[in-house]
Image 1 (cartoon, rainbow, N blue to C red):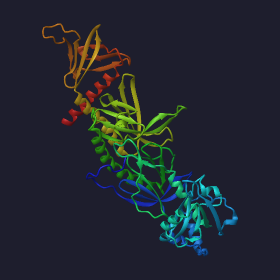
Image 2 (image 1 turned 30 degrees about the vertical axis):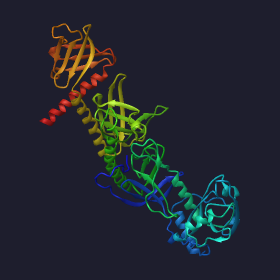
Image 3 (image 1 turned 60 degrees about the vertical axis):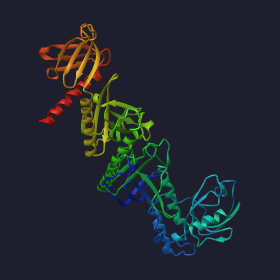
Image 4 (image 1 turned 60 degrees about the horizontal axis):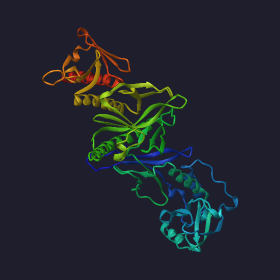
Length: 516
């Protein structure tokens, strides 16, 4: 629910940064987290000044090696690779024969401008370098075909490798202290978010990294646009220190942990504030997109929620769902909709006029016994009553969603004004007109007068209604007190009409309350 689509005037989101932990490859890793208006940036940024690694490999003082190891360990807790003892600190010569169209099959980092040696940061499986079985992530490249790279910049090293020819002889030396950093850097890529979609687009395009970065800095950008920010959804957290961010397509997630619950709350509020500001922009862009299509429905509010569902064992659990409220309906999607086609095909559509808010507040979670904020809806449909229970993360969200559903239903009732339903009354085919202002009017289905208008059989205002009931299948009873009880056969499930009746009454009471 985030990301900037338009550049309209609006309040800017707050920025902040700090050291947190991110959960990758089954472990917690320290990262520098930077919050911008439209994204969260995770940085693995080795402090090369403290690491003490010169661009060559001749400086081997114990103090500098200790600093480098300390810097690497600060972002990694995984054990080092099992490497032959014979290669530690030894220069080696490795011959690589390039394959057609595939190159060497390595990635490099570092360079003179970063006060770092040229380092192998990735070795691609199955390609030429990997097939030598003699190169390792963390090897410093000292020379290429006898061309010295000890003082080379990153770009100079890239050019040297590209022009080296089919047979390439590398002089390398393994630097154990930098290997953990590269392992962690590749772990950031496991977080996903590799694709990013713009409003109205039917396909995806790569996320653009707009922040400046050196070859030695590894960063991962998490766009806030349309993402799901939540807590305690997929990873139980009794200490309330974690935040979860799930991608708009539901395929990627990022779990961040703060030092304590207070810090986690502060980060959550900051990210949520920026996401909420961007949602305002997003809604405007969505409405602009949808305004060019048929059956235009303006989106009033939208965002991610967690819906209570039951797993295969019948136990309750929570599932992310994207909800949008228009002028007439509330829509549920499995993933965030981007294009007209996706907006036109929600997983579920419920008319607001047939929907009631039946619960809004705190309840005890069946999954952990903790207090959570939820609201529930019930919708009358031809299949009966369809119920949903949604979970939100803050009191502010709870109030906004609850208000949106209730006010949306009332507005829909005032706009529709009346509904007409074919019924059978006392074995006669009739038409029931339920009018927002006039109440109930039953007409004969046959016109038997000179004006060619249907005969009015009876009329009762809403004020006379004492009770209504239905059998859930086809019969509806309306008790008008002294006016008697009327039985109507709707010949189908009466729930839609019953819920519209309740919405009419609720809307009228609300309107009277506002006037008073």
